[in-house]
Structures are given as C-alpha cells and as structure tokens.
Length: 315
Image (cartoon, rainbow, N blue to C red; front, side):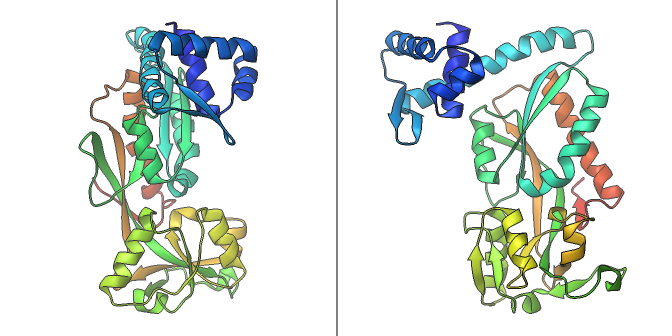
C-alpha cells in the first residue's frame, strides 16, 4: 500500500467520480481504476460501488476512507512540524464554519492567519453544524465552529466562545435612515404574528425557535422551509413573510441594509451559543493549534468593534 494510493482513493470519494478525480490529479482514469483494484485486492474487500450518482464507498470503503484521511493528515503534519521546530508553523489546517458566522469571520481570520503565519494554508468548509461535527469526528476537519446543542458526543472537545441573539428579519418598509439609532426590539409574542420562512426541523436554530414557541404556548405560522440563508432573505425581501436569524447574516451595506430590517427578539430572548470544537482523540499540529488560538481572538475583535451585533463573549 502506497501513500499515493491513499491520496487517489480519498480524492475519488471526495469528488464521487473517477473521471473528475483523474482530471484533478492529472492521472489517467484507467491508472486510477488500477490503483483502486490493487487496494481492494490487498485488503480483500470491495471499496467502491458505482451508482446513478457516481461512485460511492461501500461500508468497507468508508472505513478505509476515514483511516486514509487520518494517515494523510499525519503525513501532511510531518513537514509542517519539522518547520515548526524552528518557530514557523507550516501546513494545511482545515476548519469548518456554519454559514452565518462564516459571513463575518472568514475574511478577518484568513487575513490574520496569513499575516502571522504565512506558512499556514487554511481550508474553510461551510456547512450545517451536524455535518461539520461529523467531519471533525471523522478527521476530515481539524477544527470547527459549531452551534451549541443539548448534548455532544464524548469524543468532541468544545470550547464555548460566544452567544448571539436571534432577530426577526422583515422587509424594510421605511428608508434605512428613518430607523432609530438604538437597536430595535420585538417581543416573541409579536414576532409570532408573522408568517415565517425557517430552516428545516433538524437545524439547530430551528430547534431553538421551536422550543421557545412551545414554552411560550405560541403557534408557529410556518410559511416555508429553506436551507440556505440567502434563499430565506430573498423570500423575505418580497414582503411575503419574515424569518428569524442572527444579525451576523446581514451585511451592513448593500441590499440587506436597504431592504431588510432586523429587530432583536426579547421577552423571552432567543440565543444560540457557538463553540470551537476538535476531536478529543486527535492531537492538533502546531499549525492547527496556532489557528485554534487565533479564532477566539479574531471573534473577540469583531464583537468589540461592533461588527458582530447581538453577540456576547463566553469568556
């Protein structure tokens, strides 16, 4: 078994296609197929199956994929840690960020890491909290920001960083300049009068909303469900309904500032926590540890300068 075979296999699974992997890896497709057959013969098990959606790992293939990911990540760290011995953290660090925090955090985080650690390359993956959590546990991510929930797997280390309020987002009916300088609020009972466009019931924010409505004995008027924040905002702009999001999903300038109005929900307030998570069993490389230490600092700066509205630090 060779390292290149592991790289080939992981990329085939990631892309779900032999042909796409061949193009990206600059390897002929028959050569890729041969390398996979050699792996299967060596392991004595089928690793991939073809379907209408492309190529998918078998149960054995998924297990092998996770181990191959872990081995490749260790190999990537070797060169980086040699450089780190001389005080220069180097290497690839993969982090997950849910879409709304990513909107605020990604750019300043990349800028700060690049300035301090030019030898570190960041790979940022956006996704819903549940998917990102699985990727951390399966060693596909070094770190991830995740929304807090009632319970987490014991294999996951979570460091609470901040709590952010949720806002009722409606179409703006008056010029932005007419909005009071102080933050506008709305009670949960008043917010419940609006037909809402919300993410699906498996979404962490949706669970917070459902729980709050149930505890307050309020009926949820559900207009539609949508996974993407951009889709929810596009629907709200038409004036057909409202949504409940964090203020971090709204841009201070451009379409959001002129077309959407945000009012913080109070009595009771709705909040969601954000934690920085890593796998308990994984030892972070020095590069990953440098990024781990940088993320809270960047987030503190965004809260302190007012860019992360409705957020308060956990520490």
